[in-house]
Amino acid sequence: MNNGSYGSKKLGAVLGLLATAVGLAAAELVVGLVQGSSSPVVPVGQEFIDWTPKWLKNWAIEQFGTSDKAVLVSGALIVVLGLGVVVGILMMRGERAGAFALTGAIGVVGAWAVLIRPDPTIAKLLPTIVGTGVSIAVLWWLGPKPQVLEEDGHRVMMGVDRRQFLTGAVTVGSAAAVTGGVGRVLQQRFEVNEERANLAIPDVDNAAQAVPGDFELGVEGIESFVVPNDNFYRIDTALVVPQVRVDTWKLQISGLVDNPIELTFDDLLARPQIERHITLSCVSNPVGGDLVGNALWQGVLLKDILDEAGVQPDAEQVVSRSIDGWTCGSPLESIMDGRDAMLAIAMNGEPLPAQHGYPVRIVVPGLFGYVSATKWVTDIRLTRWDEFDAYWIPRGWSKLGPVKTMARIDTPRSGSKRTGEVAIGGVAWAVHRGVSKVQIRVDEGEWRDAEMASVPSNDTWVQWVYRLNDVEPRKHTIEARAFDGMGEPQPSEPAAVAPNGAQGYHRISLTIDG
Ligand SMILES: Nc1nc2c(c(=O)[nH]1)N[C@H]1C(S)=C(S)[C@@H](COP(=O)(O)O)O[C@H]1N2
Ligand SMILES: [Mo]
Picture (tube, rainbow, N blue to C red):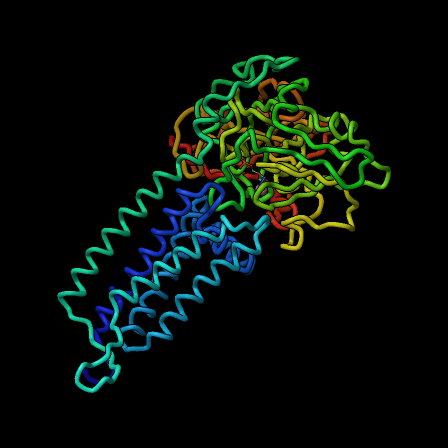
C-alpha cells in the first residue's frame, strides 16, 4: 500500500462503526448478565445533562418535551459512533496506537462517569471495561496488522484485504446484533414489572374520601379528576427508570434525629395506611401546561416516622435522596404541620409504577415536585437550610417551592371555532390552600364566576366550567383565574417557570361563528 494508507476511508468508517457497535452490544450483554451493572451510556448522559448550560437544557425541553431523554441518548450514541469512525480511519492510516488510545479514552470517560455517580461498584464498571476491550479486539482483528516479512525479517503493516475484511465485517456485525439483542432480553430479568404485578398492597385504614366520579362535572374535554397512571406526567433526571426491588429497598432516616431509623418495605406495609387524592405539579409547568396531575396516593404518614426518630430542635430541612442520587429539600414544617405528607407505595389503587417511584416515593401536598416528591426514595436526612443545597438549587431554582394558584382552560382548545353556547372548562389548583373561586373573562371584560365541581379536600385540583352564550360572533380571547382558600387571586403578571413556578393567566382564542 502507498501513502501510509492500508485501506480506504470508507472501510475505515465501517471498521470504526463496527468496533463501536460491537463494544456497545457487549456492554448490553454484560448488563443483562450481571445484576447491578449498568450501561455507561446512562451515566455519560447524566454527566452531559449536568454540564449543559441552563439555556440549552431549557431549549431542549421546549423542543423535545418529555422525549428529551430519548433525544439525549440518541445524541450520546451519535457522538460515540462518530468517534468510532475517527478511530477506524486512524486504523486504516496505520496509526494503531492512536486508534487504540482513543478507544481506551472513550472507555475511560465512560468509567469516570460511572465512578462519580452515587454508589459506584465494580459491577457498574464491568460493561464499560468489557465493551472497550471488545472494541479494541475487533479493531485488532479486522484492521491492518503489522507482520514480519519472511524474506528480510522486517515488520511491515499489511493493508486489509477487501474481501476478507468484508467477510469479517459481516460476521462482527451479526455478532453485535445478536449480542445486543440477547443482552436486552436478559436485562428484562432485572425489571420490577413482574414483581410489581404480584405485589399485594395492604388495605387502607381510613378509605378514600368518596369516589372520584363525584368530582367530575361531566364536561367533555376537561381533564379527568383522577389522571390514570399511564397518562400521568413524568419528570425526573433518570435516563433509565431505576428498578428497585422491594426486598432490597431500605429507607434510612438520619441526621438531626435522636434515634436514626432504618425501615424495610415490610415495615412500611405493617404501618397504618392512609389514602388521599393529592395533586402533584412540576415547577416547570408553564401556564396552561400539563406537567400537573391528580392521583389517589396510598402510604404512611411521614410525620409518624419522623416523630419516632425524634427530630431535634435545630432541624429545618428534610433532605430526601433517591437510589440514583437525586436529592430534594422540603421544609420540615411541611411534613410536620398536619398535612398528609406521606411515603407513598400505591398510586390509583396499584403499586407505584416503576417510572413514578416504585416501590416508595414521597408526596407532600402543596409543594412542587422538585422540593418534595422524591421517587425511588432510600434516604431521608434532617438538616438545617444552610447545611445542604439539593439537586436543583445550585441550578437556579428556589429553595422553597410552594405550588402557585393556577387555573387552566382545557376546553375549547385555543384557536377553536364554535357556534352557539360554548362550555369553557378546565381544572384549577392551589394545592393545600384549596380553590375558593374560578373566574373567566372575555376580551379583558368583567370577570364572571365559573361553576365548580366538589372536591375531597384542599389538596386536589377542581374541575370548573362556564357556559358562554352572550358574545358576538367573532374572534375573542378568553382568560381564566383562580382564587385560593384565603380568597387570594392568582397573580396577573406573567412570570417564567424559573426560579419558583410560572404565573399569569391562561389565555385562549375562540372564534364564535354566527
Ligand atoms: N428520584 C427522583 N425523584 C424525583 C425527580 C427526580 O428527578 N428524581 N423529579 C421530581 C420532580 S421535578 C417532579 S415534578 C416529580 C414528578 O413526579 P412524577 O414523574 O411521578 O409525575 O418527581 C420528583 N421526584
Ligand atoms: Mo418538577
